Image 1 (tube, one colour):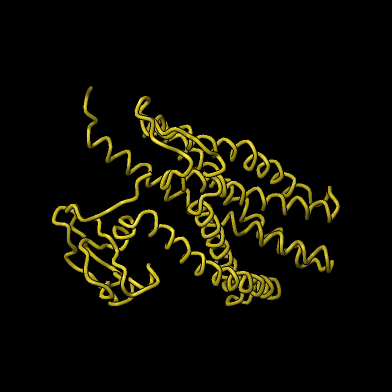
Image 2: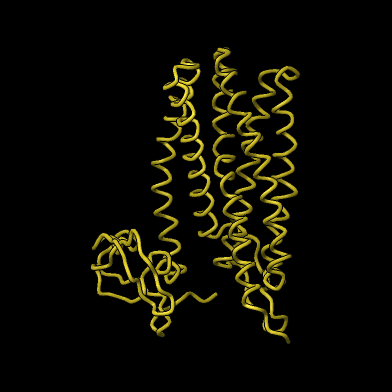
Length: 323
């Protein structure tokens, strides 16, 4: 068997990382803007005040642009699993393909169908019917995130599967274990709420720009207040849920946490620093330069002062989780 050219692997990684980075610029805004549109339109339907309809229509246009770009980049990224990582797709395909198929057939079809009705149905549908469609768009967007993050969680911690040495593939055993795994649920709620924060910041930023320019003051002020309330609630939630996800990653993949935090060698707790910036050297397995806050990382990750975090240095001292 011919060996894979390392340059091809590095280029494939770079291309996939660039595609994922570009795609995820649009995903959080899609998740958050849909529920903000639903909230604005709800106020319009309940109160009958036209300014809230204008708000929903204006921010809906930004959502439409964001949605189109997100779909285009998402499809490209999905294709790259076959073009760049065909052997991985063969190994992991049974578990990975199932949630992605459900996402496409259920959530994405639902979302894309009702998006058209949401944009072109303002003068053709009753206020109540249009509001219901807006909520369905929001539901479809977040259901898409749910199934994609279930697939992502399975890639990290394959609950409901085992390795089959006869076929050299991951054998899918339990769909229920996959969708209800703690890792999948933690990823979904944290990512969704982080999207709500991103959308709130976008609306607040544009509204603040209008207020500073003295343009559309009533429109901008109401948009800002609604986004601020939405953002405050979401920020409190994302901090809490981020801690839950971090703990879940620590329990399942402790050496990944060490890699994320730039930690090479185990030190005695509670002297673990929370590294804010570093210049890592993978060959020497050390950081040449780092700025950190001492005594913070251990209680932040483990919730106590005495549990060490396993390191990812290749010294035989690191540990992982077998599945």
